[in-house]
Image 1: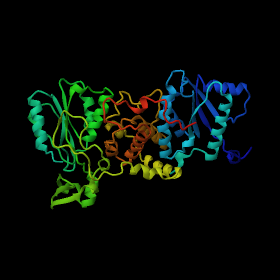
Image 2 (image 1 turned 135 degrees about the horizontal axis):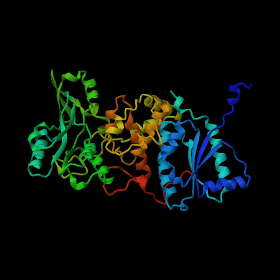
Image 3 (image 1 turned 90 degrees about the horizontal axis):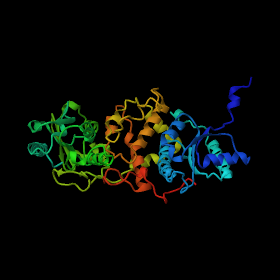
Length: 145
Length: 321
C-alpha cells in the first residue's frame, strides 16, 4: 500500500468553473472535440448565464476548501440575455477586492470571457488558471489561525 | 449637540397635537446613565420620556419597518446616519415617504460608553449625565464635572462621519452642521489592512471571525437587512450550516458584507450590537470604499439614485481579461 503522505505531496488544485450555457460551455465542448490539451483540474458547472452566479456561490465554494473558482461568460455585448455579464462584471470587481481584503488571494477567483467559438481560448484560460493556482498552493484560509 | 431634549419634546408634542403623526419613535433614558433606549410614543401625553443627548446611538430607522401597518403617520427622530438609512429604505420601497414624518437632529458625535469609562477610569455607575460641549463632552460624574475631548471617546463611525446633518427631513431641530472638525481620512481603517500581505490578512480575519457566535445580532439590528426571509434562515437550499466552524463564519460575514453592499451607510449598529467585539465596520467599510472608487457611489444620499450593483455601464472597468 502506498504511503498516503507520499501520494499527497503533489498538489493538484480543485477548481470550479461556472460556464455560461451559451458561450463558455459550448467553448468547452469545442475545446473537447478539437482535442486541445488542458489540465484536468477544472470541474465545470453549467449555468444559463454568468449573471446567474451570485457571489454567494463563489464564497461558499472557496470557504468549502476549493482552491479556485472561475466564472466564464460571454464577451461584453454578447450576452444571450443582453446584460447578465455586465452585472456579473460589476459584482466580480467588488467580490475580488473583498476576497483579497479578507486574505484569500484574488487569483483564486477569476472572471473570463470565452465565446462558443473560442475552444482554444477555453483551454488556454483553464491552463493559465491551473498554473496560477498551483503556484499559490492549497486554499488554507480556514487553517490560518 | 445644541438641540436639547426639551426642544425635541416640544416639537413632538406639537406634532401629536396637530394630528400630523400617530406614533413617534425616539429615545428615552435607559437602564443606566450611559445608555438610552428606543422609545415608542402613541400620544403627546408622554413626550416627557423623550431625551436627546450624545448617548443616543441606536439607529431607529429599523423600527419604521415594524410600524409599516399602523394607522396614520409615524414620526421618527433621526441623526445624520439614521437619515441615510431612511433614504435606503425609501429607495427600496420598504416604506412610503408620505407615511413617515422625519424629525432631523444635527448630531455632533455619539459617545462610545466603553471608551469613556476607560478614559476617565470610572465605572458605569459613576456617570450621571453626558452633555455636548462643542469640541468636548461634559461628563457629570458623582465626583463632579469633567471635560473629555471628543476624539478620545467618540464612536468609530462618528470619527469618520461625513453627514452629521440629516440628508432628509420634514423638520430640522437646531442648526445644520456642515462638517465635523475631526473627520479626516475616511478609510484609514481599511487602508491599514489592505497594505498587509494575504497571509497576514487571513490571520487577522481568521482570528476575528473565529470569535463569532453567529447570534445574528448584526443582521437583526441592521436597517438594510430586511429581507422577509434571510438567506441564512433558508432551509432549502441551506447556505449556512449551524455548525460552529470558521468556514461557516467566513461565509456568513462575507455574504452579509456583500448583501449590504451599496446600502450600508456605516451607522455602526452591527459593530455596536456585536457581543464579541468583531470589527464588522472594517469589513463593510471596505465594500463602501470599493463602490466609491469603482462606481463613484455613496449610499443613502439620494432616493432617486440607483444602487450600483443593479445597473451597469458598457464601459465599466474590465480588468479580468
